[in-house]
Length: 423
Image 1: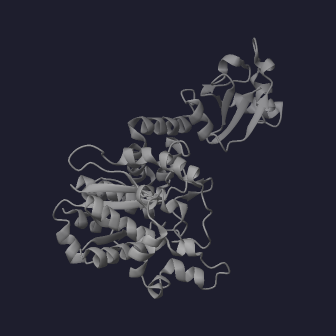
Image 2: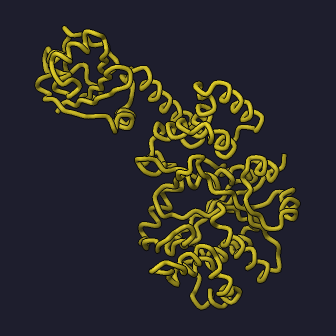
Image 3: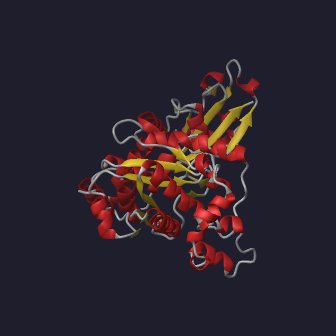
């Protein structure tokens, strides 16, 4: 299957310039680029569709050019924004560029005949003079056309603050990026999410006017959720692609909790499983929704893709520990991540020295039980696990029970968890 047919079959083609021409163009190896803004030290799963699209092109024999907008990041893309972006310092942008770099190295292959090439548009935009931009780029753009762009029109109509000349000029810079990559590397296709369509068409048109050459643009639809809520957002915020900001466990859980109505589409969008295998998973999920077989496959595939086999193993271990109650093998970070929202209390470390304190007193001190009577009832009915260990009414707990020297995780009943720390 050709790359374009595969993308179409997965529902990943929204807009394209010259559809028939592009299909013929991609019958030979080409160079493709996607741009990413360095507005944060990590990308989010909102960036994952175009990033995986680049990886799909590479696997189909084309050369990917991920572009980090070290230059345009100083300006800010108005697309999808109702207000002006905050201006970042040169130091902030550079730090964000370096933070994002490892993500590209995980998803793309930087070796071989079609090795990925990571480029930073600060390298050429930083040398571009204002007069040169106006003369060689700006004269090819009609203001009438530019104000018809959705992101500009929406800011001009009904918005008190409007749009600054800085953000209004963003389209010119992105078009120049495409021209530069065409000249320097023979890049002939820009891909992105559908919100970038106006910017892509501007670059295609600039190259047609200045180089008398045909290049192409392709967008994927923006990902949505079946219930209408925004994809990639949770109660705790965005899901990041770097484990410095979202742990492999939290990343795995996000995909594991995908709704049945979304999981088939997510498998097509975010994994490299073939379409026949995805159809099998959808059928198995429909036959037995409680098994969550499709969600498990989705979570495993995407977590392994971003965090490797070790990250997937950590995520599964934390998930299994939460289900079984045996949390004794969890790392400090996993423990903190898994039980970040559990009720927490502290006890005096001195009370746990030597023989320690009775489990009855410990449950009361840790706010697991409201009284000694309730604590005894819980313990007598074998309804309590402490760090995965069964606890009884006559038992004691001392410092040897603590995980990482200071933490006891108590499961009360089947699903209620408490964290008690020794201070």
